[in-house]
Length: 473
Image (cartoon, rainbow, N blue to C red; front, side, top):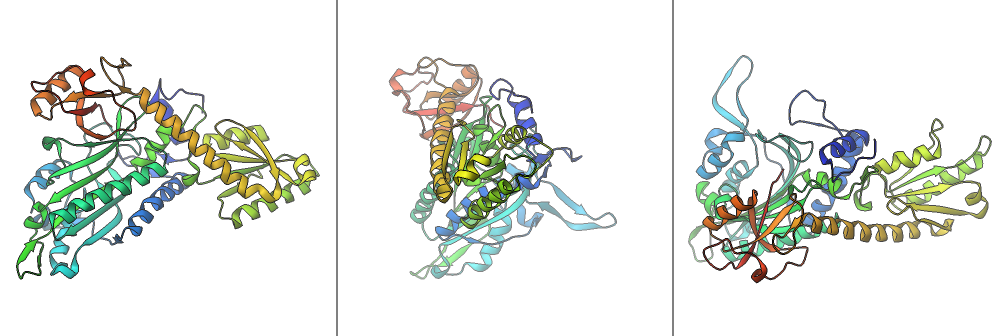
């Protein structure tokens, strides 16, 4: 991979990294569907594991629901049908037989899940119901597709769905979901805005939803995940009722929230650099690579390297020993940096004789020599420092890609913060003035925003909130 600046040519940088670091292969002959290579899939699975653990810790249980949904079930909620109908794949039969009813390939799982919930939920004892599944979903994206970021087969969709007896319990669940996602994205060292989408751009069939948004190096917005309050619209459409303690049958209140593999695309986009990928240690398929430096006949250096590998693996470290004899140590350094390995260990005659190891950070190339017995402890301390560095750098990048007109003039690229009164009329004015879509009201910002009084007012009324505008993937 040539040294490409991701900020000046993000598409070229991004595609080169995915190809050269063996993350995915885009040569499958169907637009918007990609092949995951083992290295990339390992990073994805490690990423997913963090979120699954957070869901399990908060009482969510994993389930699985079918991929195909009968049209009669899919069309029960009219807004949902209208919202997803244009991008939903349809199965009408086999090569030789036409079905009596069309089958829809799930673009998301509300309808198939809630059909079953109407059979399962009977009384208060069945609530709250908190489920999640990790599945593939299919959407006929009409926008330009981009590997991992915008695809037609989302193969790693983690969607959670909940049902509650009261509106207040559902609202509390929304807060819990926001906390889960904040912990998840924080673990990945991703900075984000949390926005509440405007009523006219809310998830089909929902009352309101929150989106987590960060910025790609080209200034476009990346939606990381959504948290959605469905109210009772689906429960009324699917007749999901329970017998309450007062003897009355009542419809449940529902929420849902989902994250796809796009979050790994965001990690790649935000943390990578001119040398390639840079995985945070928590999701790096290889957390440390051991590179022996030896001449012919110095097999004792190799044996010492194998001993280090054994100690690391016994401690749960994802370590790899590079015994490739066809390439020089320098070539190996370059190769493993390209693949985003956050640390490497160099082992030569000096380290063997002194029973030490030399640890090198991928970001600063700082070298640290420690006793053999301290290698695990030193690695973990180094990863903490790398995390701090990646987090600070990512936040600095987002701040530079966030434009605050008339307060902090910046590039034409990026997300825009503007003053807003919440009305659709003002939203349309902001969109016309800035040439960006209004993504929502900012409810949480990773950067300090100036007082609203310092912003130019494009609204008829006095603005009382911040709007986030941008072009998104």
